Image (cartoon, rainbow, N blue to C red):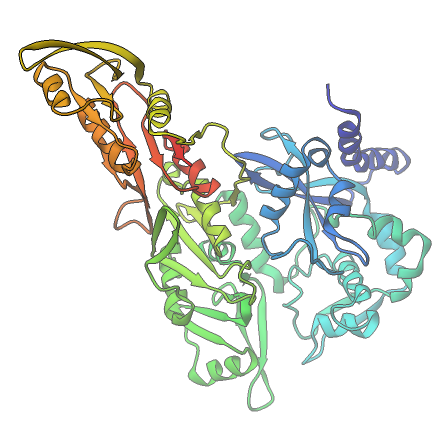
Length: 589
């Protein structure tokens, strides 16, 4: 049975649905009503879905305060909850430094597979309230604006709601979207288009805060019968592609690189004669990348004169042009981005060295972003296009790279895959040996390797024609040979005489380096091993390949689980990666 606080948290998610049902009983149905929805997001952490709520930081907010107020996970396991928060908010270098207006995701609850509609695509919309009465209230004071040359949505909104970036401006954007549902992208409006502009006075109405200033993100889902204007024909095509399952490589490209794709409607530009010309974005899409970079893709067979390209480049700073085929593949588009912006490409291979290990990474597509001077902010995106889902990169390894400034994005047969996060926890299966003495070390090592160890056994051997007895230590492989371990108790030629009688002897002295002593021990027992092993992830020639070298000994006894003996403290992500490969870790401290 769930804890009371956990149930209370989940009931908050169901409350919007109850509100809708109550309103629905009071409002006669007419076709399919528009509805305001509360939007939540789904992140995959350690192979499980986590429902998260978008939240805009307010004055006097701090992370611990926000997290302790929200979510079932925070009540049951706060350290894990904090770890998940860091993973899904990797755009925040220091969680102790958040500022008003910053958008964060707050993890709420673990989800079972397909528990909510839209869960697989990563967005869950729960009914909040019918939109009709809200839209009526907004429309009462709204004015109509006819788009003129030089207009932009940001300018129109700021004239009514205040400067760009202010709280009132952000509220204005939210309301503008509601009263102009056919405007799919605020960056694309056309001359002569009629827009509704809400009155800023609604922000002071009593009903406003209860609907729009609650936590979360409010969105509108319009009726299916709403017509699209001719200028938005690209939207209809896009929706048809989604329904038929057609994959758009440009859309996947934007998702993988964290960009914005402009591929619907028309974009208008003034020429040098004072006239306007337009480009059809469904034929010449524009990809807006972080740091102000833009790429316009021109399909083969379409002409875009040098003069017009110059005008567009003047209008858009950092604009590049690249020619593509009529049906380009995602790999070709990724190549085109690297050719358009060669300075974005990260030099290959990349190396990551820590005590006891080294990682080498080769990627066909690796893009550099200098978003922040902070060492904790990520500096690049690595892309891997997969032909087989079984070839996905190990999640712990991706988590390790994320901590070092590289974000891995994957696609499967041209379709962008949602990211998978890894919440690192300390391994509970690592065997740790503290070698106070060489005898204690051998005994503990035998136990960790699954070998048999008998201390102080009596043995008899012939020496110079005389039968002698002594006490020694025996280590044995359950399925193989055994050997005596001499810690300095045998003198003279005694060890040689014992071996002449058919027993193997391993001599380990107080000053011996444990690495070499372990190698001698394994050799005497006939157990195969590999020094400083290397683990490969992805083969040469694949878009993404990584090699991990570990300072240690990989023990490979046939009937037993492979063991890796290390003397260094490996990062938790790397330990999880090795354990995922079926290895048991033995750490000598």
